[in-house]
Image (tube, rainbow, N blue to C red; front, side, top):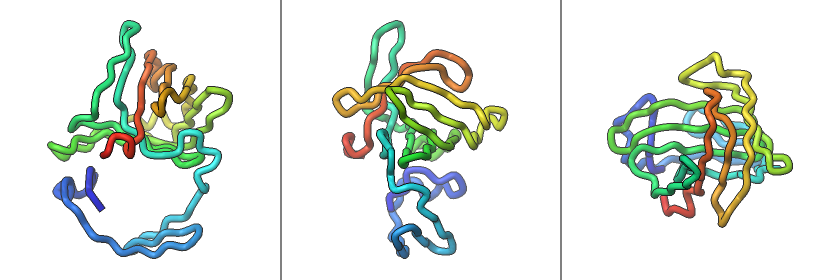
Length: 160
């Protein structure tokens, strides 16, 4: 395992660890923790690990390769989690997540946890989304109510 962030042990960031785990159809056990599968990646139009690689400002989309400050969003078939962190300074800036769905070009998140602001828990955020040349373009209003247009790229496509 390559440690890119760790909220409780930042000294692990940038290191590798070999891990032994047990896997069955619906469970993974690692050390003393058991994780249960909640979906099998379905329906999951956006299933995968994504990094933000662009934004639209004043009508112009600017894209970049992720630097040391990263925002990643991981989506299963029904659940999402975002994480903001810095791989150089080993800082962790926050996380949030919950359930999501994609229906007819609409991506809707229901926030179930948010490390920086518990008052946002329970909010539903709806965005227009489409996949363009393998990149996820999404637009709408942020959790603060401000207009956003973001471009996300799959980690695997970036070689990260």
